[in-house]
Figure 1 (tube, rainbow, N blue to C red):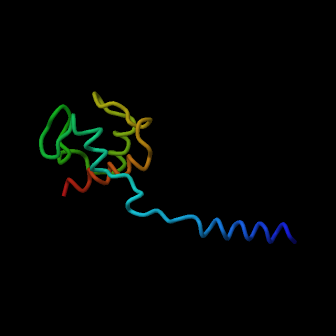
Figure 2 (spheres, one colour; figure 1 turned 45 degrees about the vertical axis):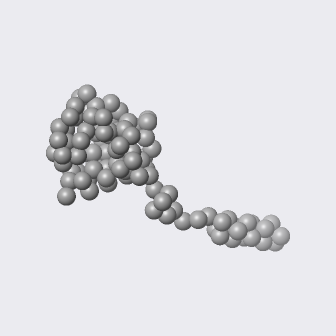
Length: 97
């Protein structure tokens, strides 16, 4: 019985100590773009790579291209976390409006 109470108490304390993720905890897609993409891509004109506004808007296509690379674009799958890639995809999509 004591073990069960200890487990319940520990679980209760853990639940209250865990903080929900806030917007400030999420990676900043604009910052990642500036650090990793800007040297080859501009928002509205072609550089080494295509302009953001000319890119495919499909999230899965963008995610795959960023992760696995494409033609001259390097792979970023091991350089960026899944959360960073998702933030970058979201940033790219908002620039296409």
